[in-house]
Length: 221
Picture 1: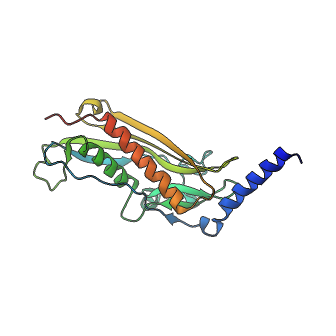
Picture 2: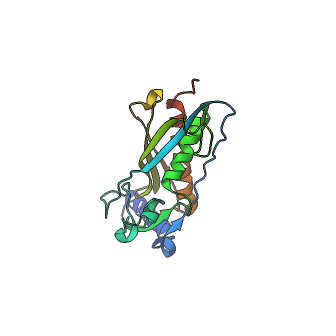
Picture 3: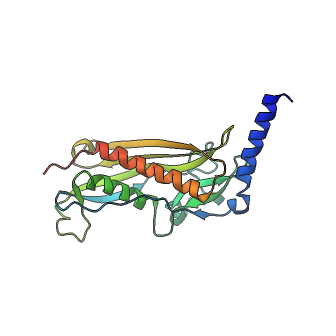
């Protein structure tokens, strides 16, 4: 075996061992808590209400790519799990194993709503709730989440990626025909731990916020 082949063999073995290091818990479900700071409403501003956030992600049974959402045991009908699913663990051979979920009380829709609300608030809008006096007259906005998922990429270098795609619709400038915002984040890792999963999702949420903030426009009374 020449030096290059030996190096490749060592690197591949290292990746397999790094992933396999989590094998003890890889077959079960893990819960991660992505970090994303919310924002307070401005004292004054055009009121908007987020009427609906739809989780429209498409899950598949045994998809051909790890970037396509899936669930262990092919239990796609379990809404309580599907609404919280954010990634899928894999072993050293790339075989899908346990699910990775956000904490109980959170969903992909609620995380996305927090991101959207912060983008509006920091652009001068007031995001109002049904209990607020001006809720009825607030501009309605709907959100559809087409993608928000993280996955493991096997290769010469172990990688973790996450993508997102959201569509905002409402009678506000760039939202009138539907505003689509998307992106993808990728990082390398020696060992894929819960903190790595949490970190890649947190960065996706921040990237989503940055893109939304730059494209939804500022409030105009």
